[in-house]
Amino acid sequence: MNVFYEESGSFKVGAVVSKNDASLQVDTQHGKRAKIKLANVFLEFSSPLATFLDDAQALAAELDLDFLWEVAGSDEFDYDALAREYWGDKPTAAQLAATLIRLAGAPMYFYKKGKGRFKAAPEDALKAALAGIEKKKREQAQVDAWAEELKAHRLPDEIRAQLMQLLWRPDKNTLEYKALDAACRALSTSPLKLLRDAGGLPSVPDYLMAGFRLEHFPNGTGFGKYAPAEAHPELPLAEVAAFSIDDAATTEIDDALSVTELANGNRRVGIHIAAPTLGVPVGSDIEKLVYRRLSTVYFPGDKITMLPDDVVQMFTLDEGKPCPSVSLYAEVTPEFEIVGFENRIENVTIAANLRHHTLEPLFNEATIANDPGVDYPFKRELLWLHDFAIAREKARGKYDPTRPQGTDFNFAIEDGRVIISERKRGSPIDKLVSEMMILANCEWGRQLGEAGIPALYRAQSMGKVRMTTRPEPHVGLGVPQYAWATSPLRRAADFINQRQLTALIRGDKPEFAQGDATLFALMRDFDTTYSAYLGFQDRMEFFWCLRWFSQEGVSEVTATYIKEDLVRLDALPVRTRIPGLPELARGDRVRLQVIRIDELLLEIEFRCVGQIGHVELEGNGEEEEG
Image (cartoon, rainbow, N blue to C red; front, side):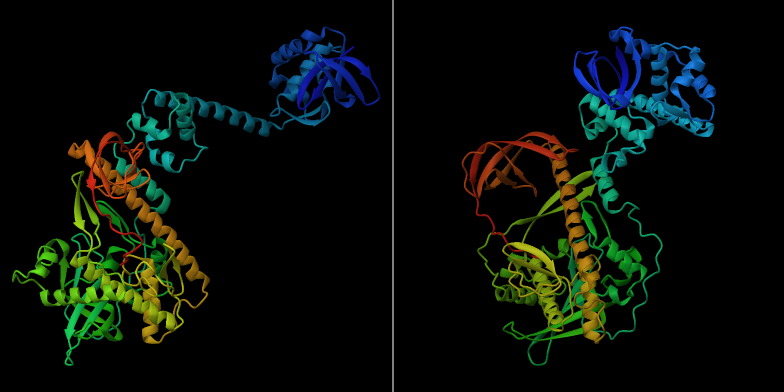
């Protein structure tokens, strides 16, 4: 005797070897001995075991599901009853098995209600299920058609319209993604390479920018609707003529300086910081923008500002007008000792916006050491401030005129071409501005800490920089505390600290108290976002460095060895690893040959072709923050 039974959702057959009340021992059609439950057996039959299941499945395939569904009616039924109605009063074992196989294999038509029992699906449900099947067939046909186009390196319009979304934040349930995935698997390649080969990525900067915007500005870089900033209250006018020092592209001018000679022979240094918080109320639309964007994003050729243009224009320290400012005044003796500080909230007249490219040829190490007699705006003040800056650097324990200075690189994009210019780090302009900002950030951080008002500080110990809401030493800068407060137009941390500082100066209740969970959340979000923005800037600069090689036709460069297999290119702000370097000492210079560049994948490969000299490298560990 043979049996037809169900096991693990599949129909099987076997020859009975032994039987008891609840189970059977059978030999399956594949020759294996199995124990099955008697309750799972549907039929006993005597026809040949080897062909029974194939015959039943062939018969099942011929059964018309629509006809079976119409015959079944609306009540529950046993499969054998439907088989008798379909095949006649005495269906064969194979016909009974075929009916059961067909019913069980059509869950849209028939709902399983028990062993061998079914119920026909309601008409509406059946129509919906069949429509769904047809839709899936059409969608799969579309996926297959798009995949074939992609495999032939042709880009369907529907996929082109979602290109960046597919590359950066794909929805794996869309037909476009499924087609791209199928084509990539067929060609054993990545989506990025396939879409490049299909002509979908003509601009690498646009591709990189799209990914950044999808991640950090999913609703676009516009500001939307917001209530405008309020006109700042009437403020006393400072009796100073202040000047700012920035590069030519700076529009968010946060800081300016002034020097006033006092009757007692001392000088009063004014550090004047733009005060957007005076016109941006707590809880306002613009404050929400600040806390959402957290920082201006900089990258070669453009930027995404933290504040809307109209707010920037209202508070930037433009020359020729009085500007609302939070000022720190330091009284300094002829020996450059600071004998007192004073805070003021005031209007400051900006006499000039000095720019690096026009000031540096006149105010530099050579002209300071050997004055050529050429006059320029604020020459007297700048020369004195430079001496004061050196004194401040000495006070921090960071003055070392013999220390090698590194190089800063500036990027400009003109008509799709990159211009990379070098600028020696630690120039008199850099030293002057950075020391005044360090002085302000350190002093204001001290005042906030002593008043018990929390702020956002940068702290450094054991070589690691972190953010905290309490004053802690910044070892790299050599200061007991360091609160970012001098760039409130472009960093949320400085904006927040200015809020706290103005409350201190006015004697008001600060927006954030000690232990405020919102302040901690803002600190965390700012730190994460600021790092991400800097990472994007680095990626964009690295791309333009790669573009520079092909643009300038450069096939060989020199580099300086740092450690292990890491080198730093001499002509570009690029660090890269070179496998197979010879034994080198830190500071050794080598010549590298360009082997391969892939701008889209941000990859460059070099080969070392020889050693050419040695240089002394600048020290590490000092974080010059502004």
